[in-house]
Amino acid sequence: MHSSKDAERLLSLFGDHILRARLADERHAPFMVRWVRRYLAMSPPSLTASPDELLEAFLNQLRREDLKDWQLDQARQSVIAWRAWGEGRGGTPTETAPPKLALAQDSSVSPAYALAALEHTLRLRHYSPRTIGTYLNY
Image 1: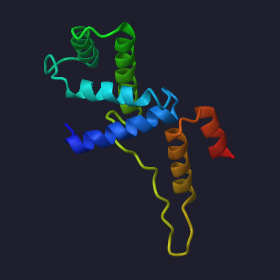
Image 2: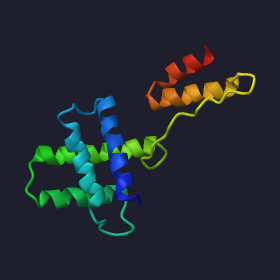
Image 3: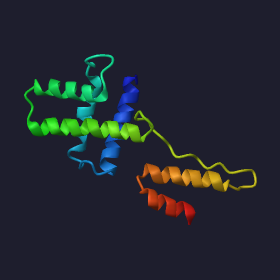
Image 4: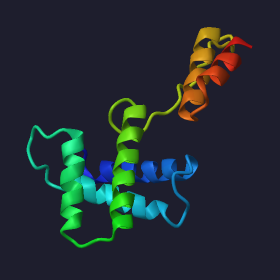
């Protein structure tokens, strides 16, 4: 698992993602991060629990706290967004930096490497596949 320092860094990145992707406004994004923080701190019901079982156990735990329905919905949406963000970033939420373009000694850049870096950047910014294809084939 991640150390608490790594977890907080990932939660910070997730908070940035929430705002960039407009999943929530600036007032509500911190609450989404708090729900995910609580979800991650929860003890799993079993070592073999599926992600859906973990989410349901988390929501059941919140129901015992007599939270309002809208709070449960916000918690559910927060965890689902966290999991989707993790899947979109290679299975677990980790920071993925675009590849750096290294210049050769003659100050040239490999065209294939430049296109790969462009494609990576466009995917991180959630451009549509057709737009990416247009940019790469221009």
